[in-house]
Amino acid sequence: MKKLFSIFIASIILGCSQSGKPSFDINLPIGYEVEESNDNYNLLTASKYTNGEIVGMIEIRYSDDWSFSTFTNKEYITHQMTNDKIEATASMIFDNFNIHSKEELYLKGVGDCLSSIYSGDDKTNGVRITNLVAQFVKDDKLFTLIGSSFPSNFSSEHKDFLKSFDTFKL
Image 1 (spheres, rainbow, N blue to C red):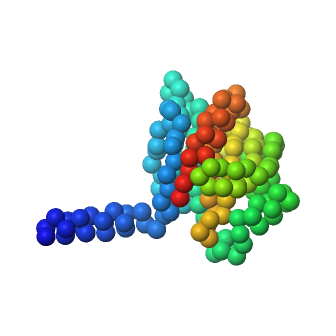
Image 2 (cartoon, rainbow, N blue to C red):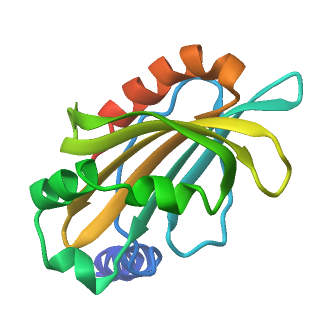
């Protein structure tokens, strides 16, 4: 009886420990280390270091804004493909912003996503960053998977980002 009670209590504690955050699973590329984040809408931050310098970062974020309950994932992708909201939003964070691609992408664990690759100089420190961003709407939430690196590393990191994003599951 004590054993059943202990299992019951443990399941309640573990079930409540996520504070309402969506649960997920992802296989990170070799060399990526999970880091702590105090952001309530950040599900994961992982960085890759070479010789003490950061060479890549993966972030998984979500938004539970009510508006994501008013349309489907397909409607979100179609709408974003035909407007410049990504460009307008990113230009608040980056100088010399360039979008390299914006297209529909299929991820094995998720399905259809909006995918974009863009570069810009971070306004806080002037460092040029290239990002791969995959977004999709599921369970009335917008999920965003971000792979970031320096332009010189992006070609090799891009492959790892895609392989990792393919394993993402809610």
